[in-house]
Length: 261
Length: 261
Image 1: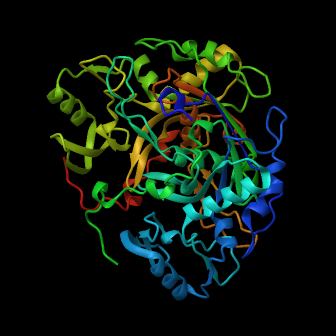
Image 2 (image 1 turned 135 degrees about the vertical axis):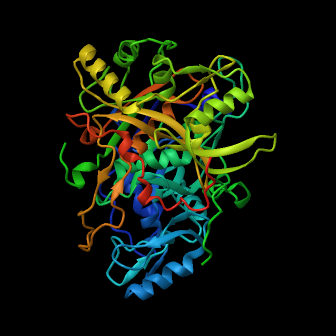
């Protein structure tokens, strides 16, 4: 829990994604649904379950399902309307080979992603799944519920998957967080030559989300992982959440050449 | 080593960053320098050293140092010239509060980053460190050397740290790779409703780089980590490397509004 630069770095980390998480539906209490699977996690040293300092990483898909964020999207036009409703700004667009437009947009949460984060994969035909309304609040609720049920207060991260400009392949990132220091601020840390470090603020929560994705996966029925070894990033209070990972407009160097919706 | 979607997802992953890696200087054989530390890695189950299926993740900084990529940069003007030499295209720029220009540029390797990836942190005063000339070749060389010394043929990833547009905080990514399937192609995989997955190609090598950064850190003298549990992404042949992670210009939706250098 120390804030100094060296203490902000562990030497070992383990991520485990348990099997046996049931299908989540509207109204489910996620902490209650996840607790048996989390308590069944087996660690490489043979121990089981959650411990203080663990970070529970949950795919936004099941958070959205529990929160009833499934909406009708019976055809392409309706799907486009759902995406438009979630969009606050079109960042880039180009025609798709099969017709229609591929749009990278900023959504209500400030996240820049294709389709505004609206998910039409692994949901019933004729529907689309919106992101949680307030993923930081979702993370806090899950944290509170896990604490009540297990006696442990892990950090909680809610993740989604997004593409990047310039890089092929999608990666997971943190869209909600509670009890996790989402950025590790190394400003003030010095290199061995006594100069300030050039690379100063590390996107710790996004790196934890990426590590967790490697074990959770997309089609495996493993929507949750526990990451152990990041206790130095777990905080007593819930903290400012993943909303603070969104770069404010005044820092955004990529606002030029933008088509407004 | 299976190519099917479910086999591409493990359920557990451990990353360990060993202490005791000596300071690297020009001409060092990195595999030779790293082998004692890698063989000393202690896993949570009490076993030691490298095993087949492991991925060795190496910070580009020590690769560059071993390859003699330190150049003179005695003042700001010289530093600017070094960066300009590495730049092939200015992607975005804006004035810095303290004078000069903050430029996000594409470098010779096709990577889009601040300062073209030229590092002036943790190097002797009056110098700057260029990225490796060909990080995929560096990764292949390290892999070959580790195999010769340990009998194990791990995957090898060479990493660097970069900012992202729209997200605060830097994260590590793969700029070189050997024996690692850098992208996990899930196209063709189906959800439980029988529809093709929307999110199809996962940036596995970048996610491994991110996981490794969480244990390596920046100022800790731990420039290497071993990631265990990703054996399904480790390949017999060296593969196409991290160069294939660079999005080709025709897929790049963010080429508008660009200032040419």
